Image (tube, rainbow, N blue to C red; front, side, top):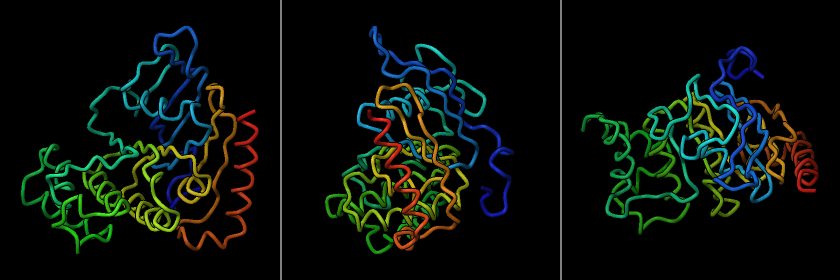
Length: 263
């Protein structure tokens, strides 16, 4: 499905290419084996599967943090490497610096990227406002709820303007109502960024709400066993989707596939 009148999926360049990937961590038994994944530029792809199936390990290989024992992996046509400036990795924990305010935390990534003081202040203020925290810009993390902390994490990540975002269950600690708010904010940030996103989750509803495709991974670590194309129109509203019959059809199909993958 084309997004906003852009190129169809097959016409987009490949941002992530994984072929025959195996990961062993130096052990006789593979953690991952025979993994094939293609992610095209500007796609939002969700990875879902049982705990221990290798979702986070796959993210770490893409990020250049874990070596492949076999197979090939390319990121925008080049091998993975730790510290690439075109990749932003968003963790399950917000990892905010407790001695910095909301603004200071959002500015931190820009500071590390070499952005000048005036520009990073302007950009940080814009992203703090976009996640609805303008009123809290001078507060320290200890004064923030978990949902607010995750908003700061999103603002910090998208303010630096990377082309590829790897997100490892960033909303797993949030309640259902707060998740819906954060889903809408993430969708808004992503739609304007045109970045590629690979998003790990255990939440089927979250995967369908956010993604263009949901990849169901085998419990045995043997890669993707099903692909669900999420043909819901964009832009999306996380709240409105709760009343969408097709959303629930996709949810049931994904749940059925997820149960089968765990057998």
